[in-house]
Structures are given as C-alpha cells and as structure tokens.
Length: 390
Image (cartoon, rainbow, N blue to C red):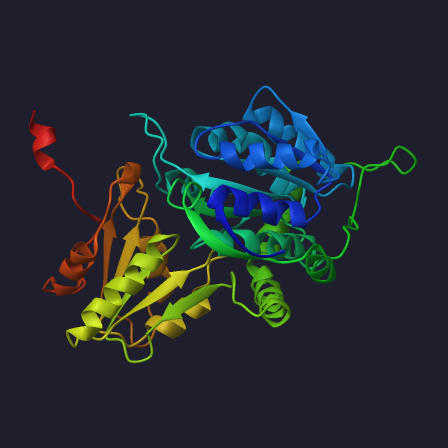
C-alpha cells in the first residue's frame, strides 16, 4: 500500500486486517473505539473476509474470541481500561488454555476517579495473566506489531496470547505517516493459521479442564516456562521482520545513545520518543545520557536489562502506573533484574503521567540533575500535595 497519513487507530486496524483474522469481536470503549469501528467498516465494505461479532460487553467479546481460537480460528479483539478489567476472567483462561490470541490494549487509567486519559494502570494489572505483553512507541510500530505478534503467538514453541499496548490518545488519536505493507508481503511473513489443537466433535478434546492439586501447579509452571522461553522466538521473529520489511519493530528492548551513557532513562510506551528528545537536549549540554526502551514487558527481558545497565552511574526508571501502598512497578522489576549483579548501579524510580498528566523535557532534565542517585524511590512527578490538605 505504501505511505499513508493515518490516525493511530487506523494504523492498528490496518495491522490487524493485514494479519487476516477469521473472527473479530469487540465492544466500543474510549479510546479504543476507532480501532474496532475501522475494522467493522473493513468487514462491511468487503475489504476483510472475516466474521465480526457484536457483543453486549467486553466480557462477551473476550468469550467470543476465546471460543473462536479454541475452535481453530485466528481471532482478534481490542479494548482499554475498565473493558480490559471486565475481560480479565476470560483472559486468564485464554492464557491458561494456551490459545494464541492477539489483542490490542489502548492504555488508559482505571477508575476511580474516572479518567479517559492514558496511563499504564490497566495493563500492569494484567501483567500476571500469562499473556506476552508488548509496547508500541508510535503508530508505525503499533501496525507492525500485529503480524509480528501473531507469528510469535502461533509458534509451536510458544502457543501463548499476546497483548499489544499503545498509549491511549497519544497514539490512538494522533495522525502520523506510516508505511503500510502490501498484503502479499504480510502473507509471506505470516503464514495461514494452523492450530496446534482445536475443538472438533469428530475428535473430542478438553481445554481448560478442572484439575486437582496434583496437576494444577505443573500446568501453570509449563505456561510460565513457555512465556520465559518465548524470548528466543520474539528475537527471531523481530529480526526476520526487520529483514523482510526493512525497519525495526518490537523486540525485547531497544536503546538510544546508550553506549557511553553514564545515566540511563528506562521506560516503555510513547514516552520513549520524548526521552530521546530530552537526551538530545542534555547531550548538547555535555551530559552523557541514554535511553533503554522496554519493548516486551512480559516475558521480562532480564538479560538485556542487565547487559545495558551494568556499570552505569545512575539508572532512572519512569513508571506510568503505580502499585497502591507500594509505589513503583516497572522500577521494582528493574531493581529485581539488577539485584546482586556485578556493577549494579543506583536506581531511582519515578511515577509520572497518571490520568494523562503531561510531562516535559525540563521535567526529565530535573530528574537527571537530582543529587544522591539511588535515594529517590517511587517519587511522584507533578503531584499537587496541597490537594491532600483540602
């Protein structure tokens, strides 16, 4: 198709459509709605040969795509925030049944108070579901991750579902130029779906059955190990995508000006673009700063984090979510990965941007300039503490 100037939601819909799903089911919820509206139009206009199933809720949509995958179809859904939480019971089943579903989450805060704006509270709440969890930085990567995600999920070494995360409004409602591949290119990269196992009345099969204590832990361990081991497949598939399409997308991590960096900023999602601009500004002032982008959050890229952060003078982690009563989430993961390692650097963690609050380059520069690295733990950026006293 070539270059197009499209809304981020359209880029997602194009990526999903090019992956040739057999069944799509979703329920509209801001800021995800445009994604499924675009997909529904593709189906209605005959541009996508697919069954689009309208449901009464996100729980229903998740149940439809679970059933479709179990019956041997390639399925797709998308949601956000409260809709993701409503899906959660079904999504744990999807992962536990080892169904290679792909879905997109337009990341948004969770109530209360009600906010339709972006943060990562919804997806981190599902981080232990068993899904492979990937983050897109922009609309191009959001498009590209769809065929990548299906190829990873359907690999017989993996057989796990994948969530593609995009920041609500910041990506979903922003227009960007994207390179849209031809259908033939995607078909060459992503072969037709051949299910590893599927429900068939002629060959009865049981999925997600009741287990006794003697077996349950073993099944959960097998899913956990498959998630950990998927790192090899993720790297293989993303390297093949870069070879076939001439651009990078996905992977476990990515870096920016990190080779000689004394301070490394760590984050995931659309903020990594802002961090690159901040790094450029600080480099002009003689400060050696770089960025480590977490592209795949689960399985967590332990080895890559250790490789890129060992020996640094300071690591600053930016979390767009929080664990109430504890604080950091991504920051805690980074500290766990580095614990006890040779050259373990001091790690500072900050919580930013909840409910869509903006963060700017001067804010980033201020974090880097703070004295006493390693003493700033789960600090909140931009909170108006006077509100607590009213």
